[in-house]
Length: 430
Image (cartoon, rainbow, N blue to C red; front, side, top):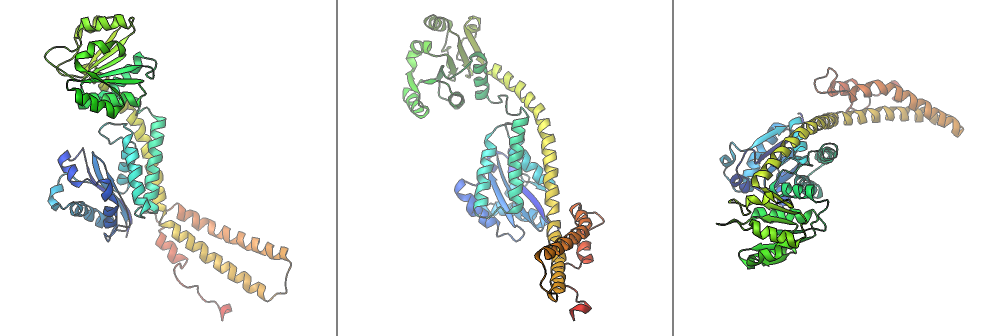
């Protein structure tokens, strides 16, 4: 029976968030689920990957067909679902395709945002849980570690992660294009909605020097400022604090523009006309479009950022083609190793059998001889070892080159050399 690797899962490509939520494994549940996975008759090794965008089970065992049949029921059972809940949402990959898919996931080529780095960390963490309890053995250990290496190589050898493809990262990219450095700059967040807060967090992650937070509800500004280690600003004092800001992220809209030309011109005078970057994420817009006419003002709205993102997605798509070629080579390398697993025990057994014959014959012939010089015995050992190695060279080379479907099968080799059978007795053994 042919052993195999099988991957079954759901992702943002195949299932809405409501379905993905139903089969997600919180961190505390993955270990117990893995133990349940290993009780399946066909599964020898297994790893569970569970993120906001995907839930996948990767398993190795002797019967790929049985694994593929068991895993959907396993996912449903673990979450108390009827089997038909997942119909139409699950995908199944086998063999090379399973390995190829895993490498794509690790390299973030299958992510909602191609090139995002978070998935690799999640993959390593959840593989680590499986490895710690012995759920990941020799095959999946090599498969996952190879996926980590592939992901690292792709990030090093391609530009797949270099361009911003989210609103927040695009805003940061624009700010970096204007300022040589962010470490000595002050940013102001106006409005603490999800998009504005995410952008502020990315600015902080990129090392912006300080952050001011303003919101119509001051208590909310205080809460967010405390969380981000920032300074809360009363909403009615925006104009007073504006001269301090080198970069303003507007995420609060209203009936009128929050930043009008007169307010910004006054702030520029106080700043002695040092440049200020305005990023308007609000719809309707919160910053007067006429601000673009001011020499020291760099104003970008949501459409500008979407344009940056579209250009960068195209650039990432071109880099993804390079990544595909790297993945394909690594999949083939792993698969050659995997196919060789059936051959290795036969090679070891063949070497052990021939070595046992050599050792027995040397010992038998030397037993009746007078004690001999150590150098002579060493010479006999070297001679007989060399003979054995030369005899084994051709069959071992042929076995290592074996691929499924080749004329020389592992079973034929085992029959030819009587492997797995007791040594035949000779007349001299009587």
